[in-house]
Image (cartoon, rainbow, N blue to C red; front, top):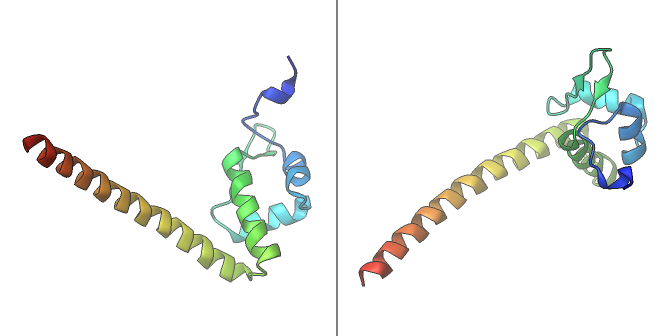
Length: 109
């Protein structure tokens, strides 16, 4: 059984750099500019990234490199995405409540 089937919990900055195609200094710089990117550090003080960190970096890379957003523009876009997720969760909750209500009505008929 190879290690390819095993998913890692933490990645080094070198691994993240290789996965994303970004230089390590870019990753360190983005940490200073985006509060959503703050990898933990291990006992030796080295950065350890999670899958969520890598996903965040990929979103940043898309906004900054592909869409040509400025740092400030990317911050605003990420804030909008977070708010959309909150709004979607609230909308979903309302829909589930409505669904439950409608099921009750159908059962009474």
